[in-house]
Image (cartoon, rainbow, N blue to C red; front, side, top):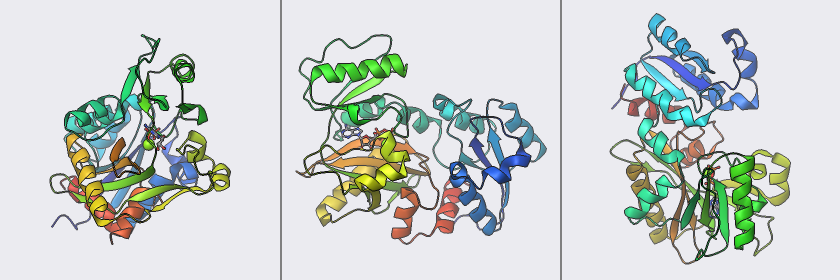
Length: 336
Ligand SMILES: Nc1ncnc2c1ncn2[C@@H]1O[C@H](COP(=O)(O)OP(=O)(O)O)[C@@H](O)[C@H]1O
Ligand SMILES: [Mg+2]
């Protein structure tokens, strides 16, 4: 099923500064553009006609490009507008209004998943296990945390890619927790969320589909050199600094042993989360597995990174779906 024909594809992504199209080639060689470079190369290899368009803060460029040469499909790798991730859902909304098929999540999921409080409210209503949490608005600073079970994990309510997550995000008392909340509210100038710290293995589950869903075998984030008994979590440094990762043995790979009942529970929980948060196309569900077998939701990522060595494509590969086939599935799920 689905389309094997040659398509006119507009590969859409965001630019943190304006860059003229003539200069794309040199940027495609950089690490920052890995996603775009890998997707472009493989789509062209599949015989599609691929045009690249980066948007900084001018949406008119999208309109004119579509007017001049209407694509059959937009491969949507955009995550921001004018450097601000809060606009991510609006780009998908514009694609809806232009009546263009596009890959990945729609505006609904992009909006819901951006708010780490809202996702947990929806999921806990449907009996998915989530960390207990308190939202701390910038406009309404949190004064106390009476009754909260420590340790706590404090993070920005709506940021991504581990922004604002450091060693001090873990706090085992009220004073340190409130201090970190203040840092996020006042220094980063954003809302914060205080969550119950979930001790356990960290698992990433790639899910694909619209109605009928497939979950790929879990990936796991390992912390091989972090001493036993120390809290383990993915800080900004752990995500972006290769040397730091090497030092602490932090990297992801195929998940370690999970018994079959647990595997089944992880798969079913991930699919349930994907549905409840209205994801489409493809997404990655991040979970923590408590030593007692509880599967606890941490975060849902619509349109996760899909450079060839990222967790989502790696988990697909493990399930026997090579990268070109994975991209073809994404295209087919967009309805072309
Ligand atoms: N409640 C929690 N308990 C334990 N660790 C957490 C919790 N929330 C987040 N983490 C750790 O912090 C990392 C980043 O948090 P996440 O919510 O995924 O934010 P981001 O959107 O920045 O990736 C997670 O991968 C995990 O290691
Ligand atoms: Mg995350």
